[in-house]
Image (cartoon, rainbow, N blue to C red; front, side, top):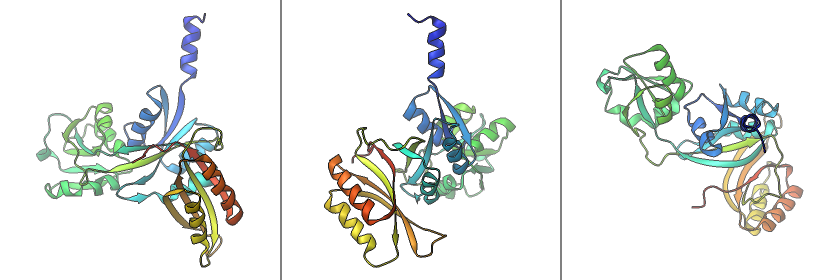
Length: 288
């Protein structure tokens, strides 16, 4: 039987280091907690690229990366980072984005002169601020960081757009809840590790990347293969190769019911396309 010290050591060693873009209280932090549970250590990074490099170097166990938003669309550079640093998508998580107006206690909206937040958060809440036109909107690098600055500097008259978690972490009052213009606002996050895709695990979704020459019918041929093999195309994103004019990389997400159908499609595309690469094989978390 293990001693109390041994059990504590096992518990402590079981903690994973999870990289996020932004700081604690951000939406990336929320996804990390909901995906892995609270028994994790958070590595905070100012940019997605620094986070990806840190993971590739083995300094984090995994990372959470926003990849697309239901309103704003794809975060195209993040696809390239996954490819460049040879990271593997091992899971995905859809988070409903709820923006709250946060400020120091004992204030009302009438006391607020400025609101600080990430540009995307400000944009997604613009209808709310049309009703409060005297408030100046100020762009910042991160939603949670805006909240943290208010707490650290004891800044009255300034509010932040951030998550409910940020309000708890930085002891701020919620002046207004769910101020986003569009209620159904979701962001898809991918969970990244260094490991290569494991075809032995149970999965029904894959992210692949391939390149095609700029000629008639090349993409249509690939899409026909996916259709013939009963693949459901959920996402396709193209990106030009800067170093090779008129050649494009395509990042594609597919879902399927049969792994045999997937492996058949994969084997055909490997022959037909250039620089074929599997970015991840994982469970589809959104079946509607």
